[in-house]
Image 1 (cartoon, rainbow, N blue to C red):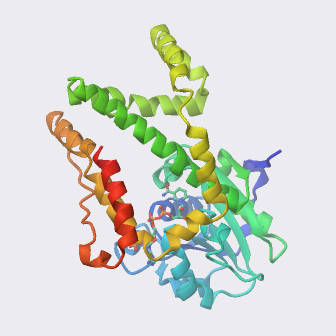
Image 2 (image 1 turned 120 degrees about the vertical axis):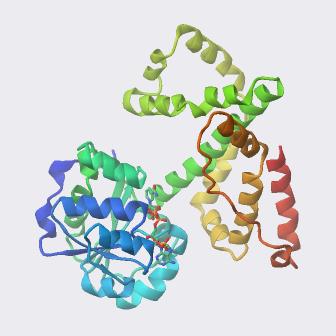
Image 3 (image 1 turned 180 degrees about the vertical axis):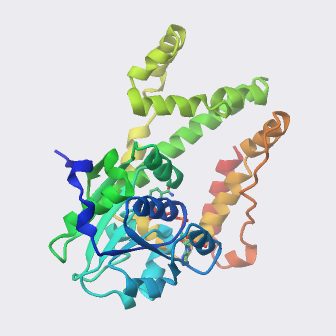
Length: 360
Ligand code: NDP
């Protein structure tokens, strides 16, 4: 049985006299800082001198450089992007970290795959929201809370669990629930959704769109039907609130008969074996190793370039213009130059495969 914690399990008084530093004032950083402060806790912000730091100042927080804040605080929330966390930890956090402090992560990735190895005299805990930053703030203000995966990974001071539960209450997650899972489980689950469910859903959506558009149905109607109306996200919300099967009753009898009777035709798609393979790569650390590798970031820029140039992007642009929806271009990415790829023959061959895949 998994342990589940609620508001009554956390005590804000366990954090009396503690200075809480939030490192990184981005999506999670801003939301969690505001929630902790609204709960009366002493919060200060450490960020690079940039726009984010200005926002923190405007929000009324005292701001410092990352190395400064490590020296000043008792608890450190490390809310930096996972892929840069290791370097910032090595250069700015670790050299200033003193015995008995608490590091709190919002994702298990860096600890689970040994990219960050805090010394044994430091508490290491995790509060990993199952919610985007804006939702962390919104659900807090609405007094609904949000689910998180929480755990003590390393208890150096003997009271890490109390600190964990006090902080979980402080950020607002215990209003919903904190579910105790270890950091590796959190990381594997998180990436499983991204690497199994995400691509499967994406492929199904694209196949649906191209099938109907190629059959002569207007792209405007096809995209609105599938996702632009927001009906699908509404259905997902109902799945969460009412249940995957129960929400079916919100749809017509024709809809229910159609999807259940046709559903059986998709049973033989070999998803399970692909999912098992992906799970294995996550569990044995192969994925983390690949993403840490020298060429991965370069490969990523290329794949993203191909992916954002595929047919759906052009279709969407046209549809959004016809429907008078504002065109927000957040994907103006350039691929790396071919010079960057010289002598990387193996990668070039692999990239051709991605290019072909996304041309579909
Ligand atoms: P963001 O990308 O929103 O913000 C990260 C912050 O880190 C920004 O203030 C950014 O400032 C700063 N930063 C980026 N690069 C550097 C650098 N090289 N040196 C110093 N500071 C830097 O991150 P998220 O809030 O999305 O993610 C934080 C953590 O929360 C991660 O562990 C993530 O897995 C976890 N998480 C995120 C969720 C989400 O929905 N986003 C959900 C649940 C957990 P700047 O850009 O100016 O450099």
